[in-house]
Image (cartoon, rainbow, N blue to C red; front, top):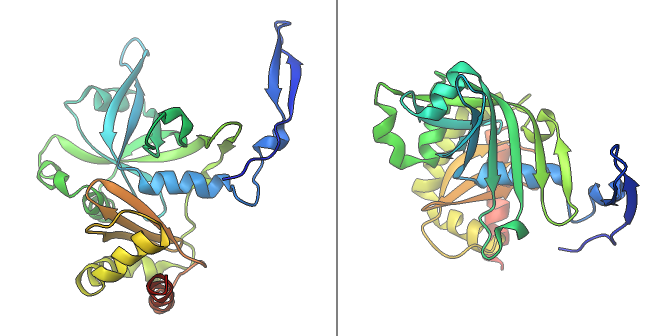
Amino acid sequence: MSFQPMDLRLARDPDGVERVRVSERYMQPTADFDPKTAAKTLMREARSGALATLMVGSGGPYCSLVNVATATDGTPLLLISQLALHTKNILADARVSLMLDERKEGDPLQGARVMLMGLAAKTESVDARRRYLAHQPEAEMFAGFGDFAFYEVKLKGAHLVAGFGRIVDLKPDELLTDLTGAEALVAAEPEVVEHMNKDHAEACRLYATKLRGAPDGDWRCVGCDPEGLDLQCGRMGLRLPFPQRVTQPGVLRAVLKQMADQARAK
């Protein structure tokens, strides 16, 4: 990954202290860095994150570790118990922040991370349940407990840190996948996932290892949307972006075949 030359300059804070600032030009997208894609990839690949809520009564900050998944449009999904402190906080004040990172080896501060801000709300969506459990199959037993419920984080914005100087604030429409016109694909997703895992498991493995450079393993498809496939091996998530926006199952079939042929040729 290449970087633009740094443009550092002195700026005076309101308190009169001079500090080094990075030029806004350095924060902008380049040929090899698209903030929207970087944030979306983190959201789709994450399997856990740090959830920040506000304490009941005091309003003080509270942070906890949670497992995560995404709805078809990328909205973060949680499965949490009403007995947990973070859930009690949410029921009193729905404002939350969710930090996701790429779990890079070595110094974690050298890796990308995104801080999502929004409102957490309980959802009874069948699709939310299905997609969460596809990404977090070990949670199946908890999903039936009376004190557990699915929540979605309705995004208000995000703060992306994707490397030194690559710091960008993003709006909800820059984080979520537009599903307009993709109703047929969304409806077919359960069948697509089942078909890929039953009949094209080898293609899923090739997508991960040949097109994304991931280690070999039991790679499975756990989700599909107009912008890409979600692949998973154990606790490792991987995003496979499509070369074009896909809204119809027939077009998806052709795109997946094209990508499989590309992977086999490598």
